Length: 105
Ligand SMILES: [Zn+2]
Image (tube, rainbow, N blue to C red):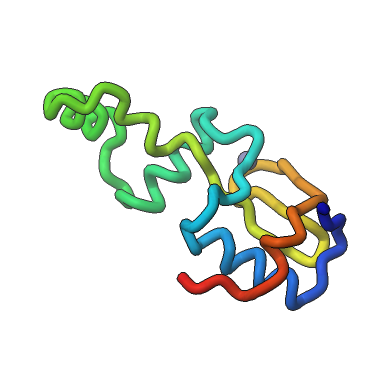
């Protein structure tokens, strides 16, 4: 069964804890992996480090697709539904189990 937005305050808390829990795959943006999203993910981990240099360094270390770790941007639950921190992507449903409890991080 799926829930539709609006979500209750408690469901929002539960869903956002689910997003950080790493037990199941989190809800992610449908536009994840485009340049803006990749840069958002890169900046959230590496601040203002130079992206192109980082990619070259990783490739020199033997990492074949260093970009791949930046291709998923997690959605944020709000009472109005899911929103993306980068673009205007929205999602109005969640699996009800994921909103059913507070997930331990
Ligand atoms: Zn997005």
